[in-house]
Length: 265
Image: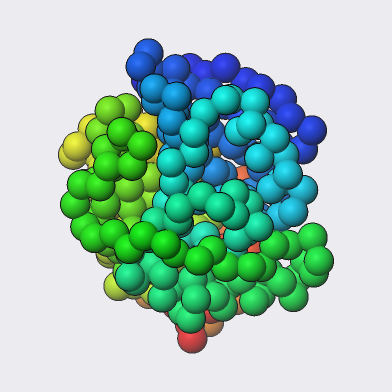
């Protein structure tokens, strides 16, 4: 499946890009919110599974209205890296690993939720999803759809074998990412190289439209260069200046700020 082969549905705030694989569909919701969230619906045989959720109240309403129009049974939501937005699909079973639950309730994910609450105020749904079903690594079947769960440092990635796709937190071939120092950079590179080796058709992420293997290689090169630049710099400001010289067309400057803080804590 080519990443650009989709049907676009324009909504009031965001948009839905629908990929049709025949017996199964992928709905990619571009929220157009302040943090560029992306949410996914995997639909098959009258049932559907949601991957992550929106976290701004207007997106919650828009997303639920779109789902209601599909006339499908929502069998569950996989809550990995984005624990906020619990007012969306409140009565749907929520699935997560133990480490993802901890990340959202007490760890780095909770810290991000607190920061976003301070930044955006009442428009941001800072309620945290209550996990009803703890899952482990390996295959889990929800609504007749198989998912392969792989734990990561923060939460978990999700392989969707029927559409040869994988979901992870961040990619973005022309966007900065949150890289929490050199060890985290190495872990990301290992994971992306695995994606390239497995030759996924689509790579889904929380903050970007679906991407492909060429985009993954671009990100590998970017992170390798970040590490080299960090070694040559003495401060976060110098690091950001050097990165911007090389990647001046990249979006996500707030993510670069966070990366600089991690490398020069």
